[in-house]
Image 1 (tube, helix red, strand yellow):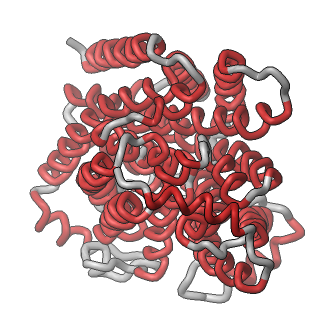
Image 2 (cartoon, one colour; image 1 turned 180 degrees about the horizontal axis):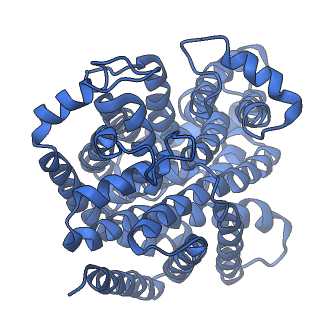
Length: 524
């Protein structure tokens, strides 16, 4: 059987299973609470896998692993370790129980809903809902972009083939989310997570085997050097640029604490025991998947040596989004290409389903419901399904831009979202004196830093050419032009500004605060 034929058969089986799960769970989705949070009764395994598969997508496997593997070599694996410890283990233990209890007590279904009821402000709810919808779009577009790169490499779809792939993936993700909501997403995530674990382990093993094992591959990396990369650093423990590598770890790890699509997993989990088990499972999942992705990415320079190849532009500059597809083409036997396609598809569809569900539920629950009379459960679920389609159409339009960098889209999305929400959400759970004024300050700085950075350094506006050149000429050890560092900076500012502003602004209403924190005395 030809490799492409086998790949198509594997894909057809995969699609049938995804849609089948959507149809099955649709029968159990009776209310908007079921659609958004699965009735708040999701167990540890489903929650852990849903958390991990939402976390890691084609953005990580195709975009970030390629870019950071090229830039930092084997030290890029630190990003995967950070994702496992800071991005998975700590938030389960630190945030999980409080987020579940407080959101349940306040009857908060979404993060904007939490902000309204925790800080007694409908305006916070409205603005945060708009931030969620706007800044989840570029993240969704980045996932589609990653998928299209891989499919384009495998199937040779021509100049506009990526548009077809993006549209098909949008239809597939919409199909099972519209049918079954959160339950369909969680059950599919579990199935997709198993595929990801098997697929990543296979990729790591074959990548090493092709270059005669870890020792020889590391030695070969240490022989590579260029203007920004001294010899002997790509195979070293901390790589050629540990300062900017730290920015990547912060953005991709700490960012999960303030992302609505991640935090919502804690709203839906069954209980405290499920949180403890979920912490261990999700950490193991992250070590294998994220660690494996970035570890594999560390070897892309060994597989992309021809500067006239498809992973380089006409000037010989690397095209990061093409690095991993080229590595896979060389390292993987044709018979296993179908497994890799399903691996990346699983990682991406699980993320996409969470993104579209988060966005549509936020708009419906937090913007439309308060303003529409007689908006019963059936109307809410129907509205969410319509908004899923709207959200996907906008994302597809953005993703069809071939020049849109996967890592750039994702960095601005995470930077704005977590830069706005991280401090308010975390201190809202732990600090009784956190104020609504502090929330506003974080919203403004988080979104402001990301948007200002994008305008100044990413939109190629001629009026700012001089500024961009001046910043580039500073030779600062921290890359000020990087949207990754801008996002990491926004998150750190959020963690600082909330307690500082809370200390100098009017104290919150004691009844509102006491009501919220009374939930934490509950014993499960």
